[in-house]
Image (cartoon, rainbow, N blue to C red; front, side, top):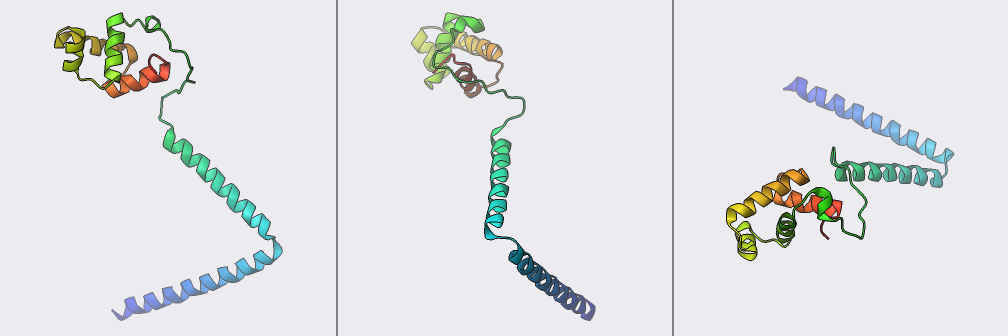
Length: 141
């Protein structure tokens, strides 16, 4: 117990001395350089940090983001049938498979087939990914 207390006090004293030395060093360096220099260095550091964090947080590996165009790409370019394109538009409206089947007057299995064909053609696994991908490539607005 006594040994731990002694080590603690020596550590505390060492930390205090290092702090005082760094404080004196800081005051010495501050006199030599102007405040504008420090402001510039800090601004550059945080600008770089912001750019790095922005790229790190927004970039997904393996995803290439294409520039969006105002005009929609025709569905024939992606080998989508007219019915698959209609199903895609209804998925975009937030309808369930059952609601899509009722709206298009087809069976539920037919809607599921069109949906799975869409997933293959758009190289996705979920409805939300299909909508996102279709928007990225300009199939839907």
